[in-house]
View 1: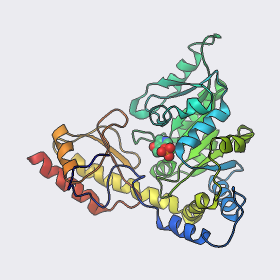
View 2 (view 1 turned 30 degrees about the vertical axis):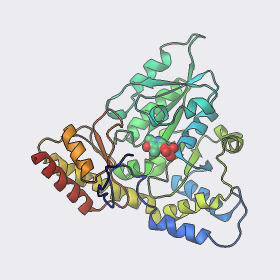
View 3 (view 1 turned 135 degrees about the vertical axis):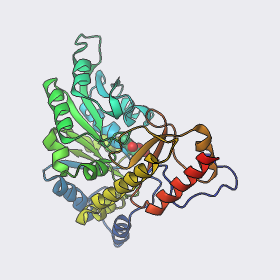
View 4 (view 1 turned 30 degrees about the horizontal axis):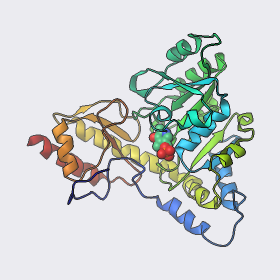
Length: 352
Ligand SMILES: *Cc1c(COP(=O)(O)O)cnc(C)c1O
């Protein structure tokens, strides 16, 4: 991102939760993993523990793989479910469509992504049903997967009944259900429900589980609740350059975050900071909230001059995500005084 010379950057920003450092629990586990020799390629104790902790947290047997990032988690898990002549149904703002440079299509050798509308970044059974039944002839890429994002790209959250209704619709049409859970922890914290309730119990077959934005450093997990879909998945990971040689450094942070619930503690905190930011912004004339805040993001409309002036004051946030407006993203380390400083600067900016 181009910075104005001499601009004073803030210590913590609202640009993205991937701007934050690693949380202490993840960092500490990394330090502990940085001792002695351990087998490579995932045959180490940290990887075993991380996978076991994921099974424990979701309270079910499932197949777990670790990859370097969310694009790989999504693209490889989707390609495991699709042939090249299939299609994937997702919301038009979905990360797999707008932010992965065509990786799902590439790794699936051409599976087509079909974009669906929906308020607040969410799909409904109705739009899925319409898309899945619109064509059944040989000329159309056959729908095979529904992919939903939790929390969504617009900072909203699917409730348990909403996920279940989508899963029921998908199952009726012979479609698998994939969840892009880059911010699943924030969704869980927002709803206050058990991980199992929002995923496999509600009908999710495969989950891309985010660790980075939650407080990790590198690496996301792919969780196959429908275990047969993981057939030969390790080969897919290796071929795609996603098998870490010193795997323990991808997986130790998961052990740190999942032991004793640090992942949910951090997500709750990020959500609370977003809630505070929303409350403060609601009271500022000239600021329009664009989406219901249900996780750790606040979307607002600001006058273009205010955006420019806030950038000059050293604040960084994105203006190109979702349906437009400014996205203000809170992280595990966002402090209440960051929120207050931002809002104070914004009020001054709007008054000039
Ligand atoms: C950040 C993010 C990802 C993962 O992106 P990578 O940069 O590839 O790690 C996936 N889905 C959503 C919704 C995200 O916000």
